[in-house]
Length: 320
Image 1 (cartoon, rainbow, N blue to C red):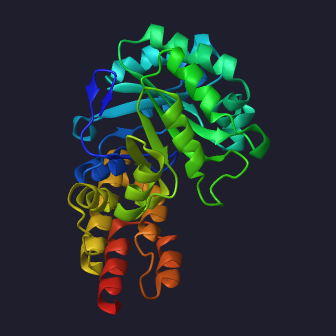
Image 2: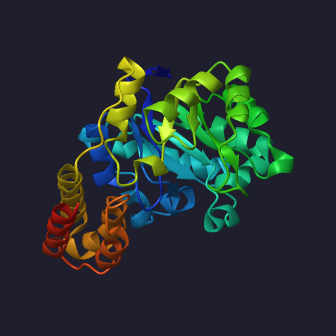
């Protein structure tokens, strides 16, 4: 698949999850075969005003490429300025967030709230496309609520404005993440535009990825929550889509090894004091389905060092 002039191999990418898809996680998922990664969303307003924290979210390492920077906001001019600043980190593409349901983002006029104003959304895409020399993509939802499912209209406008690919999460903003994903709206978007469409929502393994692609005709899938504590999901998806092979679930020992490698990377990039706090949630996700998981998750929520986590990992291996 091609996004503009960017060639993408494999069929499953990592979603830009705020507070989760940081450099350590992106590199890990890329190592397991994620087709591409997208940075955590960064505020266009913050970037344009020189906010250091917003700029840090744009950093891309060589080992996670191809990778894109994602920005959010509601002003075409400010989004264009932010996109130009993002180019300092050499992203392979710029992604515009039109799907984040978080109240903080929507209340600022960005994220999923943009779906309520397709005309302004198209102006944002046009402004960013004109400002940068890399492909521009858009991530959206099916609509704001059940009465305004307008992903098809918005996708058409974004394509006309110069977008190179569209990712559709098949739920509305109001639905958040609860009900099953709406396969039909993703298929309708795919049938309505000529640029690549990436299907997003409820993709957790090879079979669900194949189902998404078969039922929607989408060019790729994007994995979000299905990768939490399971970065090897991309390896599973690629094996199934390419060879119809179902890979065995990693052993508990293998899972704990990956978890510790992941946490060590977080601490390497952010320092142990900050990193270990951020690592708590990641470590807990790796325990899903294991015997005594609730108890171990509670303990992981209190760790203050990698050594503590190593001890918990050893106990998990012994008891599972």
